[in-house]
Length: 357
Ligand code: GLY
Image 1 (cartoon, rainbow, N blue to C red):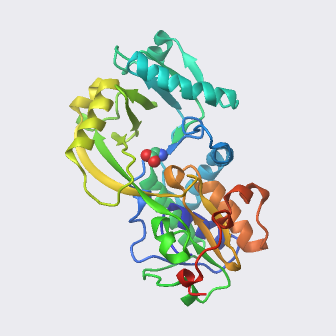
Image 2 (cartoon, protein in one colour):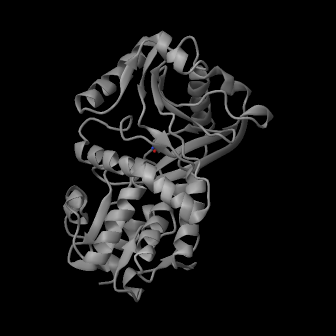
Image 3 (tube, rainbow, N blue to C red):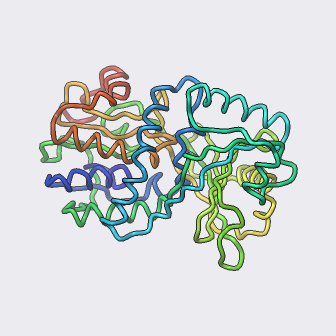
């Protein structure tokens, strides 16, 4: 296994639990996108126009989350911060509501569970929303988990099942002596495989509710505020995540403008956030692909080199299905039909120089 993020550790756990001998190689496990991510499990609110295959995989993985969370909690003894209150998608102004409404109309056409709410019903459900918020909809199946707790849990469960960490870099996958190598190296996957995985910068904030208590709202809130897309994720321990920019850039700077825009949008939707402590600003790099969908399967002409990468905005929600299907593939050599749209081969041949083959 190359990569010690949530996908890498989840695949390692599932493989080790099948009795396979598993080594995880990563010089700095958990230092990538996994610990920056907000942890939204949003198969509905993140179902975008033209991404139907990806939406199907999001829905399939989200359906596995309740059992996955229960099994992982038992296997690791770690509280994942898994919450099922659901997500509110809102618009601050009439224009914002029109934009949000166009998307949820599409999501409803797909048969996904999202229900428009009257303003009074919206406020009954989440009284902390600003009176200015014009309207919204409720996605009851869009849950959340704390990715930092998830990472600890997955590593604990994998190591308890026998997986071993080697904290060393990998230059070329062919230097690894293993019957199967799974590359789950996020943005580092491009250099190791030649696949077109690119970094997509995201700036994200963490706030903390004053007084040590929980936030004054329960739902994940996402939507638009004066044209600015934003999401706000409340945790039971008082943390609130506010995200995120989506930038085709590779510099690690946190910019004043991004912080200003994110905070303004978040406070416009949930005014109490103005009183919260700003405790962290961070940058992560989503591993994006040309079609925004993950790459899961064997490299063309290299059946011993598998890839589980390119999860872009969806790494946390896609962790269970990725881990299950990759472990099946390692054990049986046969890809599940669900993986057909996500093969590495869909991008054409990869350069063998990258893998050393
Ligand atoms: N899935 C949320 C993000 O990528 O910002």
